[in-house]
Image (cartoon, rainbow, N blue to C red; front, side, top):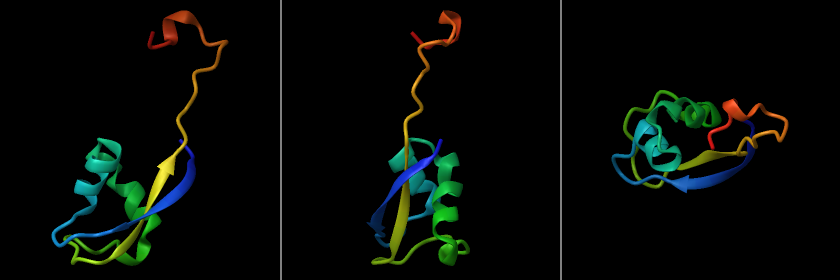
Length: 74
């Protein structure tokens, strides 16, 4: 996965990195991606309101046409 761009997100009181990852990526384990993009806030557990964070947007990985049929999700 590669980052294609970033979007700005303004926190609400009580937001957490894992909660944001769950909302954005549907996977709380990707919180580390948001933390990496926002190193100044890496030590924050629970955010105050009105903090602007950069949220990475990842390119979708395309399945190569030459991939063996048993390796595709179809």
